[in-house]
Image (cartoon, rainbow, N blue to C red; front, side, top):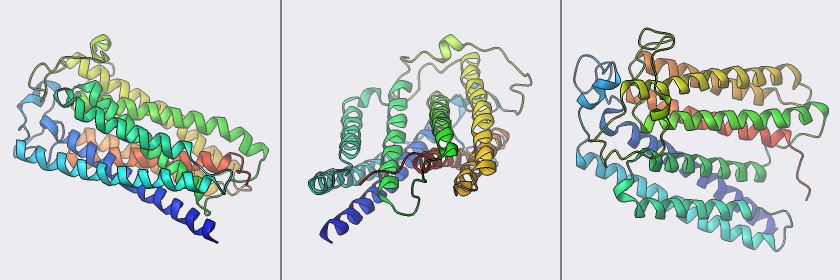
Amino acid sequence: MLNGRQSTKFFRLALAAAFFAYLSVIFSSYSRLSEAGLGCPDWPGCYGQQFAPLTAHDIDRSKPVEPERRAWREMVQRYLSGVLGLLLLRLAWLGWQLKRRKRNQQVLIPLATMLLTFTLSFAGALTVSMQFKPLIMMMQLLGGMTILGALWWIAMREQKFWRSVGPSAVTRSLRPRTLFALLIVAFQIALGGWSMVNYAGLACPDFPTCQGEWWPPMNYLDAFTLWRDVGIQYDGVLLDLASATAIHMAHRVGALITLMYVGWLSLHILRVGYRENLFRYGLLVLVWLAAEMALGIMQVQAHLPLVIALAHNAVAALLLLSLITLYHVVRSPRTT
């Protein structure tokens, strides 16, 4: 009985940690999107003007972020990270205690997640002077998504509602396909993050064309240079239009690939997964995929208003979590 109560507590801790990780990812996106004119805080105008910036050259004309506004955002982010760190400490310790009486108790993933969280926190503290460089911001973004995904995986393995289905020909074929979909979505999130930290969201103000062309001039070599000496507040050199366009178009191509493959996978599950009770999982993935694509088009057409750009990032995380849930239910059940 005591073991059952502790297992329930472990699950609740994992769920609470996943919730705070999600909040941290979304608030971090809010901080990045509202930096240096990347997103418009008002709509349909932009920073009190009638029209939003239309090209990458117009971004540095936007109103900069006041230091006091940046300060409160940094403090909220630190509080969220602090709560998450405490939850992960408790989660790892409780998992270690349960391991003595439960052979398949999760220990390594909670411990690795805790170490990753503290590593990112210490790295952020040690790189204050470089925290606005694209590569540093990308490390924080991908690290946050990794922590969120790992915590959701822990919660999925502990909960009783979404159980793994029994082995069958359908589930065996879906496992590698779902894993491949997870990799595609993760790569697309990375492309979106690179676009965000390099202020490339406004490089293509129209859709489906970009700057009135299907394939405008682009500079991929400069666009994907990982380390660039830009300056702490991006007051130095911004990417030129050709480089920003290359990042934006790479994200669009990635979105098309994601739509085609993940959309096909979800429709395939709707068709073949009824007998294995997988219909709802395919529908869940399809709903979040459609919402993500719609928000991506809306933010281009509306010239990147902050609320739509933030929703785009939030739904991307939910799409990732829905695929993790799908992979959990198609893999073989755990042995006790």
